[in-house]
Length: 221
Image 1 (cartoon, rainbow, N blue to C red):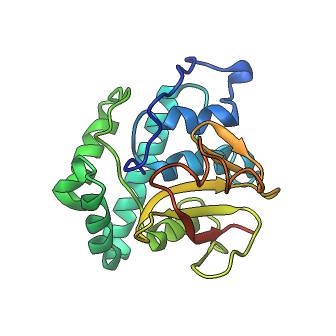
Image 2: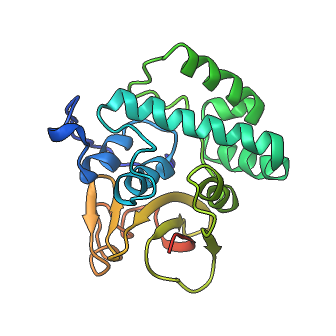
Image 3: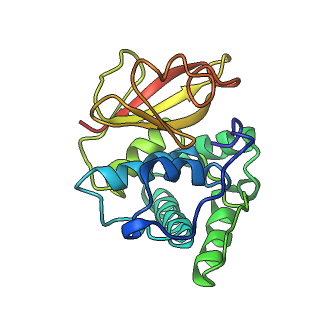
């Protein structure tokens, strides 16, 4: 999410060796524009989980941007059709985070994102398409869009293992998502941190101003 962001983001090349974006570059690149922090978390999931490695084209920034926007758009259309009960929570969260197009509501966002995808709009570093997901919505996203029906949301004890971690502010409000691989390494803002480094890192870890604690987990084990 973009309520907490890194100020300095290194330039990212237009293409990468072998046509695959390095894992460190995915979250660093996504730090400059916004669907939300969960997009970089999911990008890591797509490139590390054998179940999803062909779901997103990671050859160039443009393909990543459009690919992620299509995924989010598809999900919001799914929510509109089958899980409208999630819409109020999504709209409240996105208004709190000042997501630019979400002031139009989910329906208005869908219309604008649909136009952008159909016209193959170059998003660049625009934050217009920021769209934060609540824990319940992200769990459903992983289950239905990523095709991992065993994804489970927990908000108490850390289940460990591979998953998406919901980061809270000191007021216990959701502000960010990060990805944790099966080895316990956490990926955030272009840095890969071990389970020991992540809680104490003051550059990209939990010691960054605005981040306070892990409040929920979407387990992918």
